Amino acid sequence: MSDQPDLFGPAPMPHPRADADDEARRFASDPRQNAVLEASAGTGKTTVLVQRYLRLLGAGVDPANILAITFTRKAAAEMRERIVGELRADAERHPEGRRRWLQLRDRLAEIAIGTIDAFCLSLLREFPLEADLEPGFDMADETEVPRLIEQALDRALRICLARAREDGDLALLLARLGVARARVGLAHLLDRRLVARNVLQRYLARGPADLTVEAACRAAAEHVTDALRSLPMPVETWIASGPVAHPKFQLLAVTLRALDALPQGGEPAAIRVAMERVRDHFLTRDGQPRGGRGSIPPYAVRHSVSAEGWRRHRQAMSTVAPAMGAALARLDRDLNVALARGLRRMYQVAEVQYTRELEARSLLDFPALVDRALGLLRRMDEFSQSRFRLESRYHHVLVDELQDTSRAQWELVALLVQSWGEGFGLVHDAALADRELRSGGLALGVRRPDHRVSSHAGEPDVGHGHRGEPRLPGWLLS
Image (cartoon, rainbow, N blue to C red; front, side, top):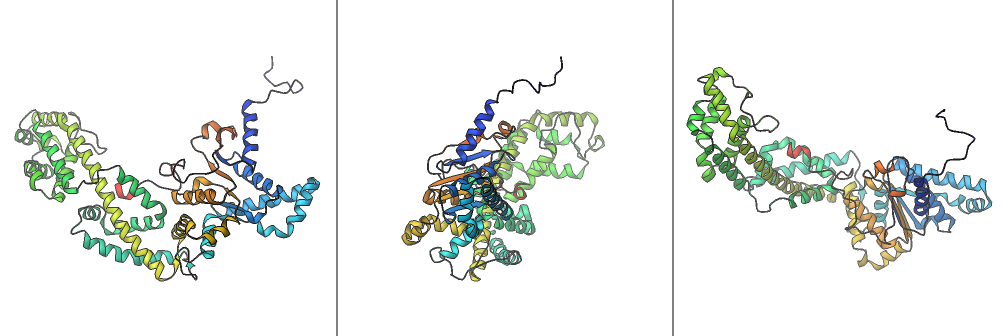
């Protein structure tokens, strides 16, 4: 029998997912409902948002009362073009569409789909005094920002170099990175400062607040010393059986003999150097404990007194290598906390200096634009007249590409919804739901939330796997 479908037989039964998908689309496009639409790319999320906008217009909502936001100018222009195109097509399809087109064709400029930065700019232009801004403030252009950052970093690094004499965390960071790399990293963080503060804060919240570089280094020296004492032969015998003819091992031997004194009075920098020499000998390049049979670059048998001695040296080393690895991993973890703490202090100095550069010229860049708008919305209860003007303007909030928000931008959207949204539709790609939605369905991705969206509970975990907010910068921990 042929496997080809019978084209003239009965139509196949609709898949249950198709019915659920249709129901989800109807719900999400219904302006009477609040909806957060989550689905993978290419499933028609923006189409649903366009339909929701059109249904608002069909219900008599004035375009000026609809706040529609996306996150790029291109996406905003495309969404507006689709809305206007659908209005024209409806005018040709039925009388109701024709009537609506005649009402709106001379007011198409009011169908405004904007970006979040454009909305923030218009908000601050309207309420500069409430936002603690000079009424004549301007936006810094792309050529000004790098120059202002460089000027701010010149002063910030001078301040941090002076403070590093008394601040062990800053001293460690500058020793690890050097001034040039620290400068590059700070410039990156200033450009992403909407998220940098929270990333650093959340990273540090996982570590001990009272840990010092000195305590971490001395604890590591103690653990390494304890591991050496557990060798199956005296430490001096083990050293003598090693590659004593090689200069690198000779330095290691001096280091190991001095280890007993390091936990009590050794300087952190000297201990860190000692720990790196221990790491090179006891661990492989990828951080794994060395076994008893492998080679230990750059050593060879000729560097030892005898082949048998070299064999016993490696065999004994393999018994304590796991403990050495654990001690060094603990040191790395503790020093990463200190590095992050030093970075936060350095970043705070750089941010203050950069903010002064902007304020001296009555300028805002994009992060400052969002930050100021967010601060204004948080304090709107203090300005009743201004709040009334906004409440009477925006009745419906539509947001596309919500996954591109940082935590600050999400809070801004949440405040808009809480304060002024009679109805809201929020759309974003749901990477976690992607496997469930590859067939093009939206049903599993529609949430029917309460009438308010919390800016704290229930928000996306933008700190993990979110395009808007990176983890602790790799240049710090590399």
